[in-house]
View 1: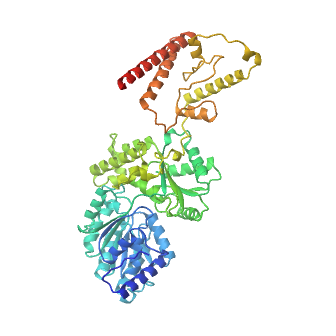
View 2: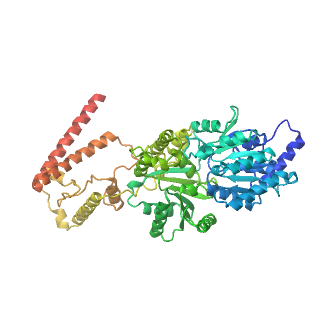
Length: 611
């Protein structure tokens, strides 16, 4: 077990300290420290300020819960999420750790009872070292701590020497450059001034270099304050990004993904709004009545929400569709997949939410269903489209609209670049947080480095025009097959020599509104979208050259497509002007021949240039 120690302490003191740490760990149900927990605990025991950056699932809560069991006095924990606070308080109480909470969820009578208990405890020195009697942790939201009553309570406790540590969870909320800026967090600097000498422990899973500097400044950290930076790489999580607008039926595609790849496993689907969450749950149940899924957000009645969470933790419920505010408060070590039904507003948010998967270290998956419409809606709300009224409704755009709007736009653009750029997803995430990472280290754990992780690639949208092509192509190929099964006499009949134009007509299909398929046709070329090609290929009617991951030269592909497009254009133009079918065909063939002649000339010129 890694435990903090001091080489200058006598052996007996070190042994006694280790025994106390082991006993405290046992109370919390933990067997050993891991990662940055030991250095963070060392800073707390030495009464030093520290900034701790630890990835989601790294055990940040132990960094302030353990000192509460080892040190005399009260540990104050500032937490922005009510659901997360309730989850931690409930877990501690089940382990017989005395913990209280100040928040909007507590009634006035409950808040008075908590204050009275803390004041009596600080006045009674006999209970100061008795962990069974004293309150060891006080959880509070930053808004609750900003009240005059809370300030007066903490000042009184401080004067009696009863405050030993202040832990600021989700510390990135302090920074106006952060993705979850909370104005009330800015007032924690005033709390620092009111409690001189009390060490502050700032913890977060997502903070860029600029955000880290702002946290130090706002909490009045000295220049030599410790900065403990963990590894942001969640190696057991694979990343996949899907264009949701390209899916013919996104709900059906999601049901198929969960049934095919995670049948019986637990997962979370993050949705932006409460109404969309309820609608998605209803659609999922309609598509798959056997799927055990429930909504999890603020409008769900508390008892029903608590029951849904417990059923999910116990395995009776497979999937929770949750909004971010409530979904971040759930803690389940065996989450095998996290799906973002909507793209988050920031890459920090995506990293933190996707990190709810695989907290037990087992292989897990993160799937982002990106939509350009979500991006455009966010930019509109931020005033990018000329409507500044929408920006005021966003929590991060208060108090300093100009600065926060610009910051939010930068983060939104970074999220869009991550979703739309074909570069290693893992490298993009880690570089964003300032961690160097080589693509080779990804080890094929994202959809860019490993096409096998493109779980939705056969769910492409099929447009009305594509369906027209599909219907005609199938009918044409069925006619071809029936001709090939004709009588022996037909097969032995001598064939007349055909002109080049006739032979070309035997192998040409073009135009989305109709096509030309003479009796002698033996093959069909479909110049259509991906939806039609993949659907026809799946039914065995056509062979598709290449796929979405093909690395063919883009210029050559565009040139070939342009040649067919010219032929199609000629036929459509002829039909609009009332020309006959035969004349239209001849015009199309001439256009195609001219395009191919230009292609041959271009390739010859290219060859001479390289020679």
